[in-house]
Amino acid sequence: MKKIIILLTLVLFVFACKEATSKSAIKDLSSNEQEHPGKKIMETQCYVCHNPDTEHDSRIAPPMIAIKRHYISDNTTKEEFLSDMQLWIKEPSEDIAKMPGAIKNFGIMPYAAYSEDDIAQIADYMFDYELEAPEWFEDHFNKEHPNKKGKGKRRGLGKGKKAKSTIFNKAGKSYEDIGLHYALSTKKELGKNLMGTIQKKGTVEALKFCNEQAYPITDSMSTIFDANIKRVSDKPRNMNNRANKIELKHISTFKAQVANKQTPKAIIEEEKDVVKFYYPITTNSMCLQCHGKKDDQIQPDAYKTLKLLYPEDKATGYDVNQVRGIWSITFNKTL
Image 1 (cartoon, rainbow, N blue to C red):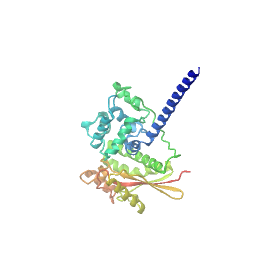
Image 2: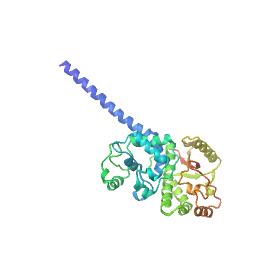
Image 3: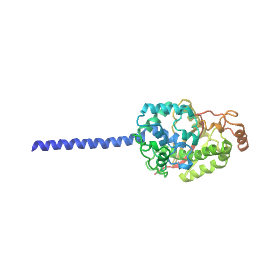
């Protein structure tokens, strides 16, 4: 009898250890997911065009879950996926595309100067973790790809889920996280409308849109977040966007970081009751249609419109992955 009691005790102990280990593993996995650098890069950079909160009819690019679903099958290794992502992001072209439907709907993705390390981090996160999916995604995907329905063994491939609420809770967030949320939400709203206009009406109409709507959209986001949200530059297009002395100093800092191929980190300055947040605005190939070189990236009709709308324009001559300006955001300190 004594031996049986000892045996039962050992069995219970083993199961308890396994359960504790399992709970610990789940906790670690959740922690690792939140802290994964690829998650932050994806949300900071990719979500401007690939945001899962975007409504179906407002898309300017497919959500990240769609990219994962097309690029990863049951037999795809992480190394193969990383190689595909490196190849596509470094030189997007129709010849190597695995999403012809997206190209038909949205055109070729504009070149963006991501470092190999950043691409590797994004791909690593995409491969290992579940990605947010818009509410409409699963039905849309299954309708478009009936032969792929239900396929995919990795998390985020087999099902969609409702995207996170757009209501932002500042509780427990760092000042950097709060500032980034304000900047990226405003960037997403401006980018969605701007790129949609470029795709549907062309560059000239997009310039007119910026002239008429950029300030109202930014102001509306300031009201939503109860913050002062500005985009400023050392080479402004609109003279109301001229950077002040402090902002010029931070622009120089960000330019040096980008030139040295460093990933920029937000600058936070705390005052008595408020926080001042600064973060760079960098160019990609799409930006050069309006901010590149005359008669090279900027076409004659667009340049003519620029001079008409902005007689004092200084915001040209850029190449990809250059600091065009910064987000300058002031908000109240959290309690």
